[in-house]
Amino acid sequence: MRLSLGGDDLLRRYGRSFEGVQMIESLANNEPGIYAWLVLPALLFAIGVYGLLARRNAVGVLISAELAINAAAMNFVIFNKFITPAKVDGQIMSLFIVATAAAEVLVGIAIFVMLFKFRKTMDVTKMSLMKD
Amino acid sequence: MMAAAAFTTVTFLALLVIAVAFAVATVVTSRIFRSAIYLMGALTTSAAFYILLGAEFLAGVQILVYVGGIVVLIVFAVMLTSSTEMQEDVPSPLRKLIGFAVAAAFFAVTVFMFVLTGFDLSGEGKAVRLGDTAAIGRKLLDRGPDGYILPFEIISLLLLCVLIGAIVIARKTRSAGK
View (cartoon, chains in turn orange, purple):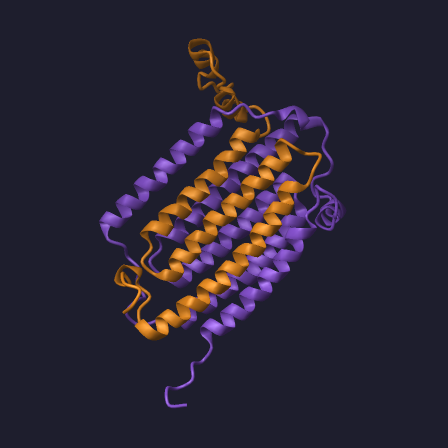
């Protein structure tokens, strides 16, 4: 049972490179290719962006940002595996991203702790002025 | 060959469902502590994806630093900043709608762009084993033009500065009279 999303028709009609569609439809028949793999970090980043915008607790915003950063790091490793498998640069970039995310979380939490001590609330919708 | 490919695909799809479930639970749940725990689940599933991709060292670092360090820090933050009134985090419907619209638009544009990109997959056969930790170590300490020794040293400086900065920000302030 072959899955077909019409990649060949699109190619004939529009004459452009629709390999992505063909690769996604070949997912049912082979290993996932780069296009199928890339959907995953895009999805996780979009969910992180939703959390970034919709969360009211400041620590919740930080958690959503961590989700997005992790998705970006995964992108690097996917490109490393499929485009330059002879090098390890993508993984090294992901290592640096992990270290930088740790540093960012540390500073963010220090700021939130002090903010909570002075304003008694963690609600970002109530913190619209820099001076209380 | 077919069995191996089918196994990879099935594992990929199963882990995809689990990862998206954890991520959605992270951003939708109204209780912050549960959000931190779901984040731990999402990051562990991410490490599973790294193993599926073949980057085992990175998966280990992910579990150690992200799950074992950052999530613990976030749990500390949740405990230190919990107040009785902010136990439930329910955004207004307008915020939810705007957030969902932006996230959906971002996802649509990203997928549209990379599906139309012709990636140069000619390097497929020249693989060095992706989980080659010795190669990662050599590249990190490489002093040639292609090496990462400078970012490596700067990262340690960054972590030192962040440590000092966090202590300075969050220390007990002296009272006004002294």
